[in-house]
Image (cartoon, rainbow, N blue to C red):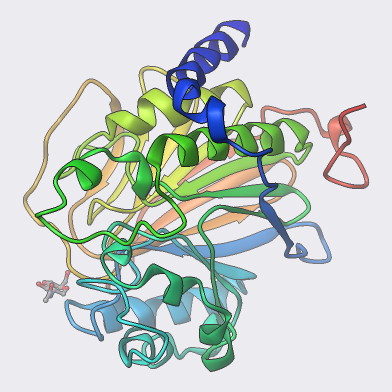
Amino acid sequence: MAKSRASMTGALALLAVAALLCAPAAAELARLENPAKNDGSLSLLVVGDWGRKGTYNQSRVADQMGRIGEKLSIDFVISTGDNFYKNGLTGVDDQAFEQSFTDIYTAKSLQKPWYLVLGNHDYRGDVLAQLSPVLRKIDSRFICMRSFIVNAEIVDFFFIDTTPFQLKYWTHPKESHYDWRGVAPREKYIASLLKDLDEAMRKSSAMWKIAVGHHTMRSVSDHGDTKELLQLLLPVLQANGVDFYINGHDHCLEHISSRDSPIQYFTSGGGSKAWRGVFQPNQDNLEFFYDGQGFMSLQLDQNEAEFIFYDVNGNILYQYSRTSLRKTSHLQPSSYVTDE
Ligand SMILES: *[C@@H]1O[C@H](CO)[C@@H](O)[C@H](O)[C@H]1NC(C)=O
């Protein structure tokens, strides 16, 4: 623990120079409450890389999400980003919002809050539109922010805006336009975000701590690992005992238990177009990999977390459970403690 705390300090120091001169006191991350069920348990679905107006099996995945969502009586849905292809939304009046979201995820069980992060393709459009409360007037499920916390009593979810981490989006602007309003300069944004995350994670006394971002930390598919996240974000997650990192970006379903950390990595990026036939093995322990479309469910209680991957027909592809590493006696009436 001491060692990972030290390496985190090192990672933060890399960014400190640019941030020191002008960074204001870090703003706190927004924290939303989503109560667990009466028995303290929670179930949810995770889908990523989906908004294609129903094409590439998006509608089939959506139908099966509706069916499984009903069966598990889900409390909410998480989107790991790349919500609208190919270039995000053009504005709050972009019809793609209805065509790729409202008109697709129509099942009764999916009429729950959707907590969404932004992906790199979302950054290619009008990012402020996706973050705008105007969309919530059109479809109240759509809760998209850059970085925020959802507390569901037994668990804190830390949603993290990972696109600004990746250097190539900044250094190769000719490939595509990225909407960096409210983000640039990169170093200052990341330093402040990591500080906020570290503080919030340290204060969390929930049984489970789960981080969600768009980009891969570890992956054997097309994009592979994201080295900026391994360098800058992973030390913060390790220092604070985060249990799981959930992402999209690679269009597949995978579970990696890495060589370098007890953190389990889950990719749920199969919401529409899949990258069939792409596989780049690495040094990690690959527990499961599927290069077709599908989604993931997560069921949690105080003692156990269970992840399940499903294909476009709703068939179970893979199942993984883990018991909590924390002692139940740590659980407090409020899942947050003060610094004192
Ligand atoms: C839809 O899913 C089926 C079953 O996995 C697959 O055979 C088919 O190629 C997929 N279609 C598209 C357009 O990806």
